[in-house]
Image 1 (tube, rainbow over the protein chains, first blue to last red):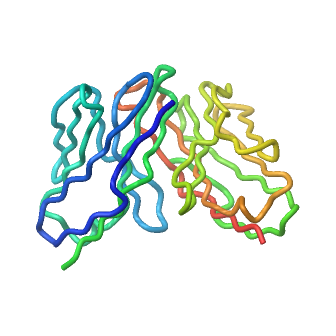
Image 2: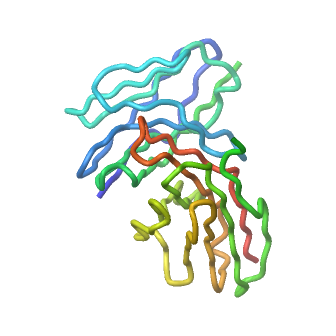
Image 3: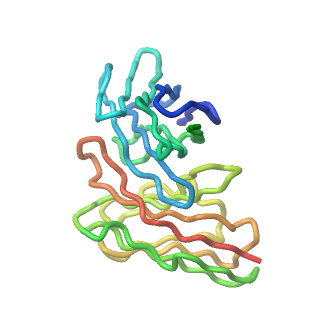
Length: 111
Length: 115
């Protein structure tokens, strides 16, 4: 089966850097994704890692270590609008169609 | 593109009634997913289709739930009979399947309340 673990909530101040960790277990691995969801909204895609290393997209970066079954999302220069829930998700094991989400990390950004 | 379109956006129904949720995926996407989100259980994958064929329905909670995809542009999730514990946000999502990143695009959700 597939399972993911991430912290339930994180609090940080505006302008700071925050890292949200995710560990996963899956019988087949086709990549780790991150999604953002604001209250009352739908999850939206942020980033995807299929290979080890860091992927950078503006203020957001995502890292993957396949040997450790571990990844993280790094948010820099935090803004109030970054207050949201962040989900890691894995594809596989059936060739990638099935995507399972972690329980989500609620990020509170304080002024 | 208009994105994934779901209807109804909000529904309040009485226990025992039939509920039908509808979804139009993004044109050209070949995978369609139904997720349910609650505070207690998070985002649960109920069922997904690839090229209109149900691939995995292991997340469907019980026989009261059924889903169909009669063509590439339409899917339904039906609950019959509905129960208060079915109250949740139901998201439909679609993707290009095995494209780069397999980005999943979510609809705005159908907020279901069963009283």
